[in-house]
Amino acid sequence: MNLTKILTASVVALSLVVVGCEQGGYDPSEPGLLVAKTVDQDPSIPSISVNGTQLHAQSFGNPNDPMLVVLHGGPGADYRYLLNCTAFADQGYYVVFYDQRGAGLSKRHNKDIYTMQVLYDDLSAVIAHYQTDPSQKIFLLGHSWGAMLATAYINNYPTKINGVILAEPGGFVWADVEGYISRSRDFKYFGELLNDAVYMDQFISAKENDHAILDYKFDLLTAVDGDKDSPTGNEGALPFWRSGAVTFDAYLEIGEKERPDWTANLDQFTTKILFVYSENNKAYGEAHAKKVSSAYTNVQLEKTLGAGHDMISFPTGWQNFYPVALTYLNELK
Image 1 (cartoon, rainbow, N blue to C red):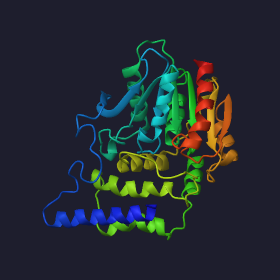
Image 2 (tube, rainbow, N blue to C red):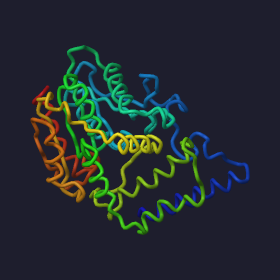
Image 3 (cartoon, rainbow, N blue to C red):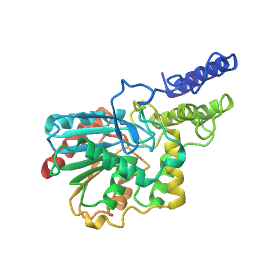
């Protein structure tokens, strides 16, 4: 089934829900009706309670090995599409995944709670929760927004991390982020895909904190990235649990208002970083990779052949990314 058919089927399903609501049969905000339940709604989902919230989280490997914390993209995505990284657990790393605050299966929060400091504190709390010894080495692996978060964290705490793998961060200063977003969303404005993705607006609307409805609508827009017409060069749509629409909106608004620069202290981080970009992402390219990565003083720049933006998720990209990433980590282990 192609993406257009998936979106059309989703709109039909949503319209049936709306009809049911009008007849008193359904409530779109009911947990699990439109999108997956979160950890506070389903106690069977693996979770940790840190920094005043409840996060969907899992760990793999020996807790005494060097820790590798995997940071997903978005803002508002989840770690499901990065689970190939469990392979590092078989190579002597303690691999930790978590859905960021308000994203994926983690507990939702209203928009006014989000700040960059909250994300830093959450990451520090996740590390502290899983760390078994103060001397245990800590590595970060961030993809897209997750790579931006990893860099922002290092910029604030340059001595806390022992190494980092960055896969196609949009940028570390807001102007670079805006440039990449504009290129990666280079669809014809009235094209069929975007029309399908926004078509459900005529069936159902949501207020700022109507989380389930907003998440459902955002899920459909997210699916566009997997289409063959997307400049990001992906092989298909990514697996995910839930897209956090409120989280995404909050951090986009923070970026537009504060126009952050996460490079001021990066010269204090002298350890070599691994910066990876993909061959097939037309919106990224070598020039942008060199520009963004130059904020660090010691960079290993690598192109992942046969892959698009989500190189870690699909077979060809993963097969080319994994050995490079493993070699880098082993050098610092």
